[in-house]
Length: 67
Image (cartoon, rainbow, N blue to C red):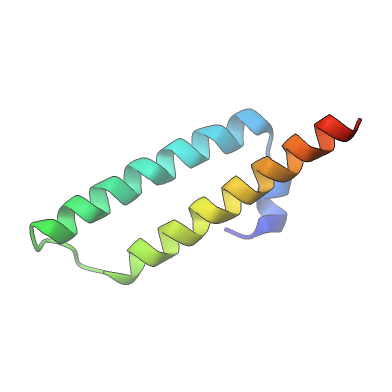
């Protein structure tokens, strides 16, 4: 998911997506620990998606404090 796509979402949708991504990351780490993870690169992709969502949320937060 790109940052441009994320900026089109509302704050509530972004918070929901962030929670879903964190849950997915937890599950991936659990699978890694018990050696059932098929694609280890998915962990880094999910981490990057979490960072993107967090960045967009922070940008919205900063815009609201200026206005």
